[in-house]
Amino acid sequence: LFQAAGIVAGAGPAFLFRFIDALAKAGEGIGLSPEQAASLAKYMVEGAGAQAAGSGDPPAELARRVASPGGTTEAGLGVLDGEAGMEELLRRTLEACMRRSREMADAARVTP
Image 1 (tube, rainbow, N blue to C red):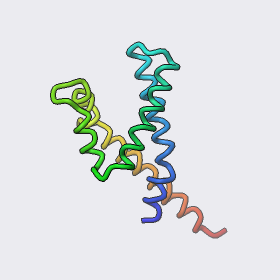
Image 2 (image 1 turned 90 degrees about the vertical axis):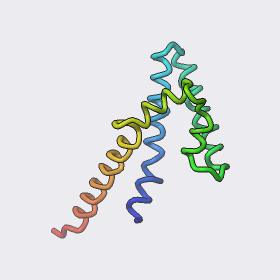
Image 3 (image 1 turned 30 degrees about the horizontal axis):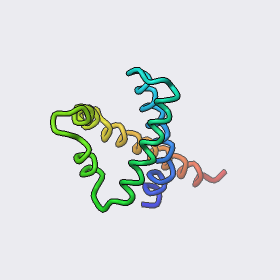
Image 4 (image 1 turned 135 degrees about the vertical axis):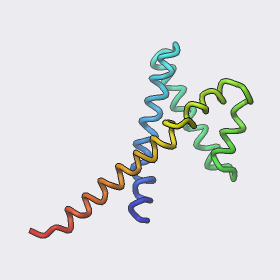
């Protein structure tokens, strides 16, 4: 489990940084300036991270509380939770990390 924990904790920040960047770019696509979008994305992650860290509730429950039934957040969550959504994307991402980790470990075991 050391490899798996290292991937989630070690590579995870890079994935979160990509998410922040993608969220900001998507914000630009709906009319925010690049500066506004970047600032909002960074501060949103800071606040949501603090809330998740300080809560005893699972993140899925926190997301449910933020989403009003039939509202805009629920519509967006429908995309993220869809068949090719975030869970599937992150599963493939972590599998790619594990594959590469195993390849690197195998290469390190080879003696000249």
